[in-house]
Image (tube, rainbow, N blue to C red; front, side, top):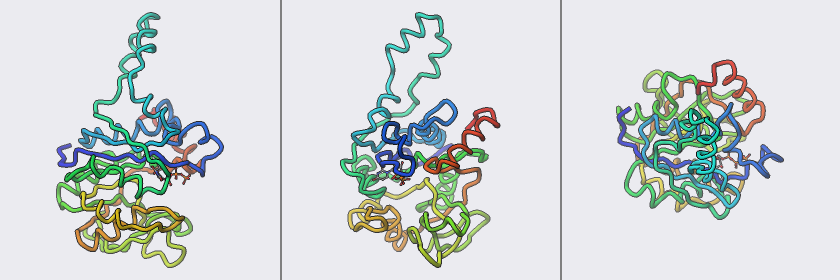
Length: 274
Ligand code: UTP
């Protein structure tokens, strides 16, 4: 896929409170999805969409993510010694440059993304939330956004229709339909407690212009006392076009235990292909 978007930010510094007690020891982003950690599936999705540089936002308790994407020299020499060299390819770090920065306090997704300001510079960039796993589309989740960006320019958000009773957990958009599965976003409300503007919610893939950072710097703590990315996007879309693409494929939020189990069941049934 040819894309002008070469950079991606993967925020992975949250506490994973919905998944306690396991997240006391194992970051949610490292939960196994079949035999790979969730964050690896998301890194592979980014690479498939043409991303060349990734910034992962970590925290003090997430060094295991940094170790995971590094070489393991001991393991490599052990595999050679016991004639299991055929397993070496699977241990190769992904073909992409990965950078890391620590978020000192988990102040919210917007605060985490703001740490990527100098990484992004003047370039458009993707955001992939590693707890949202998208499978079974014709192309990957991020590639579907890149296609829209290539055709229509502007910012692009991934959308999914969500049942009414669960909409209060999402950023919900007010949007005008342009084509099948493509919307122009007019407004967005974070976690609406009543009267959601539509059934279309934003899920964890975004393509944004770097102008988002100046809005993020103005955002005050919102829903849940956190700096919300949605609040900055809301300001951005007043000034720039923003599209919503209804993502083809199944999406699993691994912060929900039921969806996490359903994802692994899906991998089992479908030959572990993401
Ligand atoms: P979530 O809200 O889904 O993750 O954020 P969480 O806060 O870790 O989990 P719960 O809701 O308490 O169970 C989406 C992504 O953004 C990251 C998280 O690590 C997750 O991958 N995030 C969230 C940050 O990097 N920093 C934050 O301050 C908040």
